[in-house]
Length: 419
Image (cartoon, rainbow, N blue to C red; front, side, top):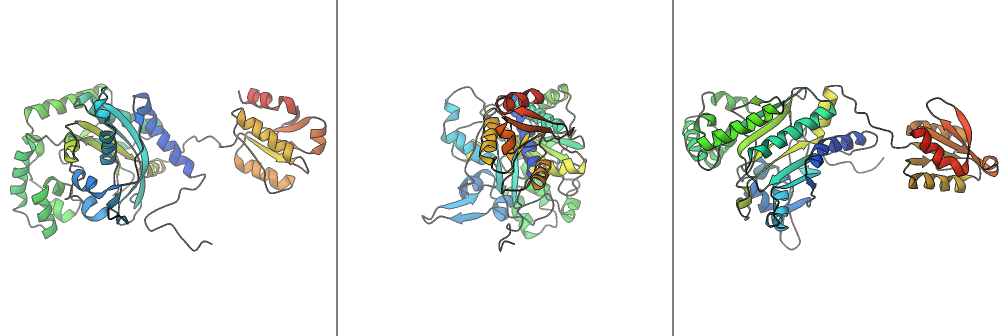
């Protein structure tokens, strides 16, 4: 056994279980690719100030959860705790906003890191698929992203999830609400850290999950009552477009989300089968983030869906994904037939057939056990006598039928039977 183990709060993905994660990533990204979103990949670490300025200095992510490091040259970096700030930074650096054809539609997938108390559904290393539409202020984009996420989950077979929707207003109306909320919060019995947070970003207090805080928030001012006419109209258009698409959602006036950059539309996907860690993903509009990190005004919207949480949601609903076997043909070489059989396996692979073979000089019994475990549809068995006659034995692993097939016709025969 190895001396080393995966760090606390992390996990390894091992076959065959890892295939479920790949299938979830593919299912979430498939609707995005059909809607014109191109793939983007950013470094696993960034300048720590990118997240401090973009995500928000009052957030738990920045104050408590970031993994930070200092390079030998003295640069302060952080392992990325979320994807939006990194993607927007990359888009700005590449001047995508100057190339026309806005919005720039981007999707990504990768690992993210937060120092949290490990528990089921909450890890220090986790996987997400995200999407961002950068450079356009249009309710149709907000609706599009919500609809695409809903489609992804429906495609996976999930049904016990809910979409929560709210509006956080904008720079015109939110300051008025902020002042009203701060006045309310100053009259509560809050701990010192929460009081400090209320002065920096009072909306973050609404997101506090502690029962002793939530109990005091009864009667707090509701942002909906402070929205300006423009934000009200924008939000109603988003709601109308989602409804017209047949996507069911719930209005949640308390929905805030945990990041400072959100404006107007905010939404969350929750699954009732996951207990306390019910959020499987979420997002919203972030019209001012580009300016926060030194770029021009670029109204944008996006989301991130947790791959880990989605897998747990599938398990909670008892959904088994139809994941095809990784091997279609499994070859068994007997005696001195290995070089020739290896050549046949290579030919099959070049012809687009997923093929594998038994290694390590195993006998027929052990090699056929490998063939069964591989999940292959067909097995090829060949010894020196078979090859001398110019044939191999092709066995259908489902029916058990076996017949000789000329070596020269093997690839075409396998293709024909698969068709």
